[in-house]
Image (cartoon, rainbow, N blue to C red; front, top):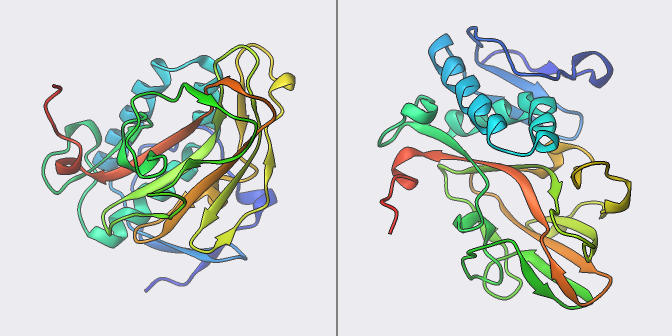
Length: 239
């Protein structure tokens, strides 16, 4: 097992798309935990960059900029899941047991609300506290051993958003609540998380997301998020 690498945040925090090169197996010490990262070869990195570039071309430029800024954290999630399942990452070419990633869509089971699958992020909301993402009632959603999730930020593409506070729960623990100051956004309402590692959910971990609204009405709060899993879990015919 390689010796752990300690990340110096001032020197080691990298932005932009990771290069196409071989990455060795490594353990990263974060000060508040560690990540066991599987190796990635050049072919896997080509598939990874291809996946992100395609997604960045199909989303709002403000979201694309956020994805590019935190792309190294998306790669770390891929490597965490690969370490757990021992299968190669093939991105858009993946089949069967091979790993791929997908940008958030509301109908993914990892984004259930009160245990129900969504069809849209647009919702009628009531002033007060609610669960944006949870299993039945307010229970946690627990990932299987071949799943990983990372939330990079939040978007709300609607006039007059009603949400103003959000909080991640992992298991029974919860993280510092985050204000959603939509009024400071320029052309498109996108707010990064305080730090994406805190919003990374590894295989077998449980999570849920609490949200607070200041008024009744329409709201469209949605995560800027990536889901990593085996291709067989995502390949299905559109019906």
